[in-house]
Image 1 (tube, rainbow, N blue to C red):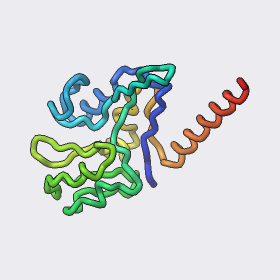
Image 2: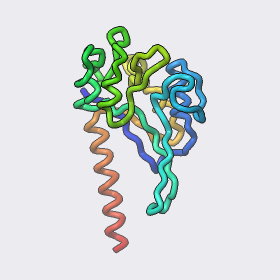
Image 3: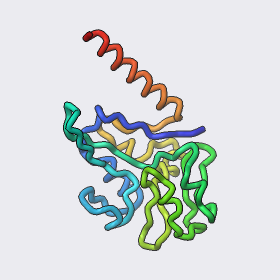
Image 4: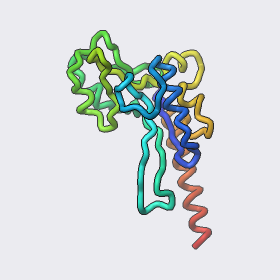
Length: 175
């Protein structure tokens, strides 16, 4: 089964707790203001998006690896160091096999693969150890607004469809 993160920007409290919890869970120094890679990778990052056309000129979006169904990073890895967890579908890295060639980072359109000081690739692992114990990933557990959830891809797709249908229905009543 393929699991995926779902992010609801309308529920985000802009507190950066997801980013801090992720760093803490992966034994990296939790500081949201540092440059990426300065004290280790940032698997989950809160990104500021600006839009002049939106009623909200600045929005914050919590981003992490998408654990793509057809993961480009996995396809281009010459060492086959990137693989999929059979239970949750998480795209994981065997750092013992990684060559540090960076092909994965060039192939990933989301910028998920990062390189640690040892020159080897690392990325969000969906807190796979926590999932296997029946726990939510650290970012999901720490999200005070409930903006980040995780579950089967179909559940996330259905939630997005339901949300869009409600917005369309509400907008049509205003017309």
